[in-house]
Amino acid sequence: MAGELEGSKPLSGLLSGLAQEAFHGHQGITEELLRSQLYPDVSLEEFRPFLAKMRGILKSIASADMDFNQLEAFLTAQTKKQGGITCDQAAVISKFWKSHKTKIRESLMNQSRWDSGLRGLSWRVDGKSQSRHSAQIHTPVAIMELEIGKSGQKPVRVAWAKIHVPFDHTSAGQESEFLCLEFDEVKVNQVLKKLSEVEETISTLMQPA
Image (cartoon, rainbow, N blue to C red; front, side, top):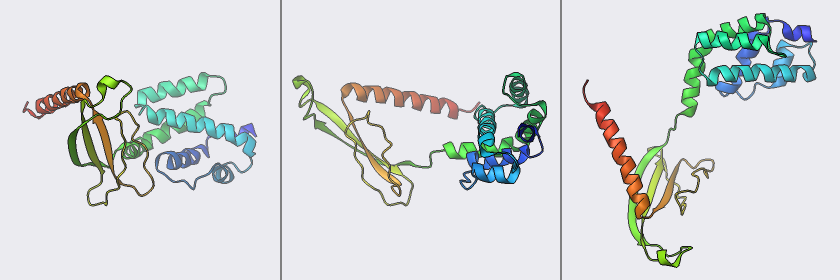
């Protein structure tokens, strides 16, 4: 029933449910729960595209962290596009975002924050034993081992041979790991240059105004 979907009364509850699921980690909020509680007279086949549209709109607003001027411009454009939203729905979305913007923004910031930190660092210089080019064999390379995790937790040793291997092989429960990196002389100089730039930037920011 298209008329049921166009109504603005249950939309606030739908947006709240979507926000709880998408931004606050409440996994128990399913499409069937939202439909049965808010749009019981609408079939699941009709409800799914409507839900996807509202989820997309809400995520677009949140990911852009829209201020109120940006929000009004965005919603106005949505009312004018084919298959968009009604003016009443735009008003409900606007009111919802103005009320929940701060909490959603805080939740997104918390989700993107990396809790782990550098717990330790060790290094050694070794001779390269394998290479595609024979001239590079036995040339000195720096082997650096970074211990990454939260303080007070038992480390789990996981080694990677090359710097370009993605650091994403974390298993459940492994909250402290060892990342092994290999640098030749060129890479060492590049890293030192970048660290020098970081140090200069921090020193500049720490200087009194």
